[in-house]
Length: 106
Image (cartoon, rainbow, N blue to C red):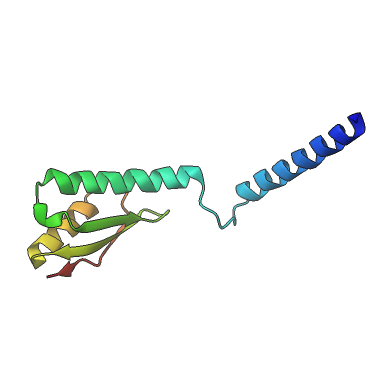
């Protein structure tokens, strides 16, 4: 019984160690928790700034941020001015490295 318990413990420990090593690999293709939080913070900052302008016209704008800080804006706006304003607000947000304004003018 002790041998079986020891074997299971070693096998599980090895599996966890291997997954931890793979997660720390610089070329790992998965998103880390820290990156996800950073992306979420930038997205939240942009959405907050857009909401602070009290432009109901920007309520249909979606904001997505990638791990390098690039932000994609999508959705619709009633005018080109509203689209441009959303892009400027996003560009002036801390942490944003690039803005891809894919908002469609209705």
